[in-house]
Amino acid sequence: MNGDDSTVRPHEIVARARTPHYRSPTPMRSFPLAVAALASLAATASACGASTTDAIPDAGRGPGADSSVVPGMEGGIVVPPATGDAAVGPAAKTYFYAHTDTTLYRLDADDPALPPQRIGDFDCVGRDGGLVTAMTDIAVDKRGRIVAVARDRVFLDVRVVGTGVVCGSAVQLVGDASSTAFYGATFAPAGTLGNTDETLVVANSEGELYAVDLTTGALSVIGAFGPVPARDPSGQTYPSGNVGEPWSLSGDLVFLDNGGRSVGFATVRDCPNPPSTSNCSTSDSLLELDLTKLRYGSRAVVTRRLLGRITADTRCTNDPASAFGRTFGVTAYKGAIFGFGRGSLVTRIDNTTAKACVVANLTGTLPVGFAGAGVTTAAPIDPPR
Image (cartoon, rainbow, N blue to C red; front, side, top):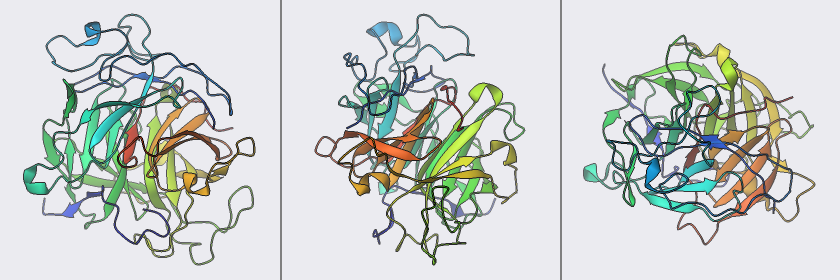
């Protein structure tokens, strides 16, 4: 949680120490491994402008009806891949995927202001003797595979079956993070850690990033966000008591392949005593990350630059200040980052200036605010200028 939140964020991954008015598009696309639906992004994000209003197909399905079901994989969805992947048929409509503590939704990437469609509840939340009480985040690889994280485990085989979301098999997280809360997850594109395939990465409230071994659940530190500076590029100052403290992950991070020139972003917050969430700033900041600096066993700073404190764009009006804090889910497309807030607000954030506008206010539509979001690593992105 952010700022005045004194309680621990209810949907967090905890790695236990063990012995060994703004409308804008955002596309995404994908097809599955052993997973559920994810999609390709394709549209243009226009500042405070209108966009398409086409109806979204039935929740849990791609464009059209049963033609999108993967043979031999009930409920699995396939969507044609983005540029660079093998063709799988005609271009698919683009969707964003976001979730609350218990339920997965999708949003029309061409117009996130349209009402989200409910895909279904995660069947693993509330099971295992209550150990899985909430879903923390989802991550999506280049092929559209979704993995989901909840407390101290990762669900590897997330699929849409009927009107529900089956979590599938899980691996327990183990390592030396000593009960630190992890808030966000993404896949690091192949090659960023010297691996031939993509690697699941999670980040925590102490400002550290960890790679996850999906076979053993082992956590390996691979970098850190670094310290809070005195001011951001626009001259906004940070509280003196927070300066020099490690950035704390506010809610999420997103990595994209970008044609082999990988880029990454994270929404972070400044706090006086991280990993404590007490007295943190109520607005988030946006970092651009240098994925070439990720190294196993390293806590070296991987932040390329602070893009700025996330604040309202002057072209948008009546956006509450609360819209720019507690950004628990993040996706990206072209020149924009899309934030999914705990207050049920969706915001579009310029990935160069960190100026933002509210795309959709879903207060009253969702039973509880967003807990996370994901987008395929193959989504197109315009790197910050």
